[in-house]
Length: 293
Ligand code: MG
Image 1: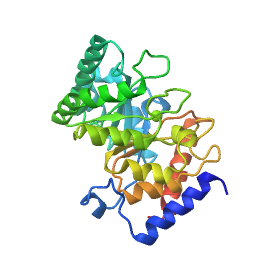
Image 2: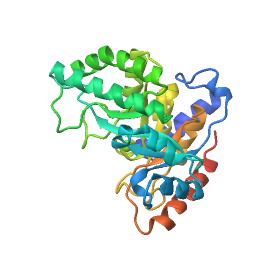
Image 3: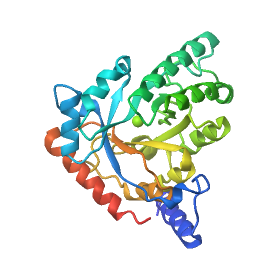
């Protein structure tokens, strides 16, 4: 048994035996039942426009679509395209804004841009705006200073996001892409210290496979701050089910924190999307069922 397997067993066993509610879970949220709300990034779905893609996603069993930042130039067009499709905007994949750049003027410009994206994201009813503090190739403050700057500067952005009806979602990556912010627990601790309803976080099964010792433990650490999840396999970053990767342990964690937000595909597709994506959704629904809360 490796460390990962050991943690799976011991964490689940301990929590179940003690009837524990994870520390980060809001007391009222735990009364509610968790839901698997499937979504996909827009570019995985064949179709000539957003309306066609959303319609296809709904037919395949999904209820969310994750959009890229450029759509936030015209939120009204997004609302028009998704009207009557039964599909909502799960998140805006926005990426980098220079939030931990050593140059204060770069950080200020990035914060202003992020606020603008949050305004538009609120208009389309998005759960949040996904933000990566810095990729490895970006200029950035050393980790300790970077964290301090985030805790200092995120409250104002969070207040703006919350007023707009959305939130910033910090995304931990893996060390090949970003050294700063790799663990869900670290992101949760930043959210805790920022203490704003407009600042939350997400988890990505691909990065988690590389960085976390336990999917279950990572989601429990994230608790009430977790508001989005990315789905992919752990090695080749392809559709769930296209290479061995367990989701039931992570899903068990999501059930324990009464997770209500979306789980969204961010991965490559091997084969024909029309066949393989519905197959992946069916596989994920089975994994969700297999995850005992
Ligand atoms: Mg991701």
